[in-house]
Image (tube, rainbow, N blue to C red; front, top):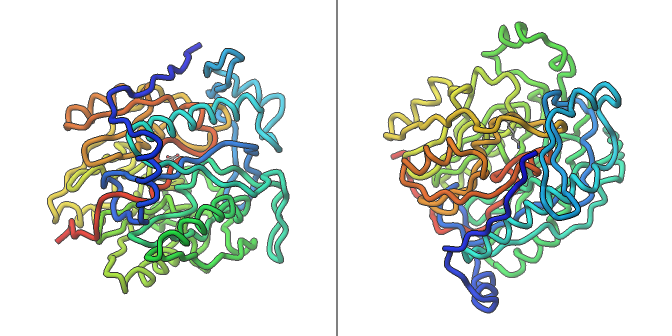
Length: 414
Ligand code: DAV
C-alpha cells in the first residue's frame, strides 16, 4: 500500500524561535483575500474525533470504494484500499469515536503541515481545546448524540479584514465546535485592540429549519429542481458555514448551498456593507449537493480562479469575473481520486489548496496533475501528504484558518 512521505521543505527561509515569537507577537488580525502573503494561521487537529451522526443536515454514508488511512507502529501512514464495501456490510454507518490509529495518522499529517508552515516563517496556532466531542448536545430545540472534531476551522470561523466572524453553522453536531477555538480567539482579541469579534445569530437547528424530504429525492427530481437551488436547509433562518465564503478584497463571494442559504448571505451582506465590502452570491447549478466553496471555486491570485470542471458556475455569476478580466482555470481530474471509506467529501478535495502568497500554493503531494498545472502558471507548489485528513472533513484549505495575511481591502472588480 502507498506510504506517505514526510518530506519537509528544506529550501524555505528559517526563522529561529526568537524571531518567530516576535513575528507572532506583532501579528494583527488582517486577511482580506485568499492569497495575500500568509503570516499567521490556525491548523486544525483530529484529537478525539467522532463520526458525525446522521442529522437533518447530513446523511453520512460509507464511501464503498474507499480505503483507510492509518498510522503504522513505525510511524508511517498507510493507505489500504477497498475496505468500504466490507465495512458497509458489517456495520452500516458507525457511531462514536474514530479509531485511534486513524486519528493518529490525521494528526501526523496535520502536525507536519504546521511544521512546514513554521519553517517558512508563518506563525501557526493549534485549537486550544475544551470541547469533549463524545458529549451529547441537548438544547430546547434539538438533540445530537455526539459532536465531531476540530479538524476544519475553515468551516466555522472566517477572518474578513480585522473581523473574526463565527459562522452560524448548519449542522447540529457542529453547533458548539467554535468553543474549541474560544480561548485562542479571546487571547488574540486581548492582544490586538483593532480586532473585531463577531458571531452570526445561532440558528435553532430545530426540525423546521430543514427540508427532510430533500435527502430522499431521486437524482432526476434533483435535476428537475436544480434551478431553485433548494437543498436540505430552508430559508427561514439565516444560515452559513464559513467555508462557503471566498474573499477577494472588497468583494466577498458566498455559495448558495446545503450549508449557506439566501438569508445567511443577506445577513453577511448587511453586516459587511458598512465596511464597504460587497457580498455576492455564487451558484453552481450542476452541483446537486453543494457544501463549502473550497472544492469548487478557489481564487489563487488577482485575476485567477481555480475552477471545478464538473461544477460550472452559473452564467450570471460568472459575469462579475468576466467584466473585471478574471480568468477561470479548470482543475485537472484528481490524480488519486480515492478517498477514505468514512470521507463525506468528494474527490475534488484535490483542489482544496492553501495559498501562502500570490506565488506559492500548498497542495496534496499525490496530486501531480494539479502541481503541473499550477507550476505552468508560475506558482511554486509546496507538496505535503494530507490524505489521512480527508475523512475528518477536508483537505488543506478546510483544515486551516488564516488570521493574518499581507493584504488590504483592495478593489479587484472595479
Ligand atoms: O466537494 O466535497 C467538501 C468541502 C469540505 N469542507 C466537496 C466539498
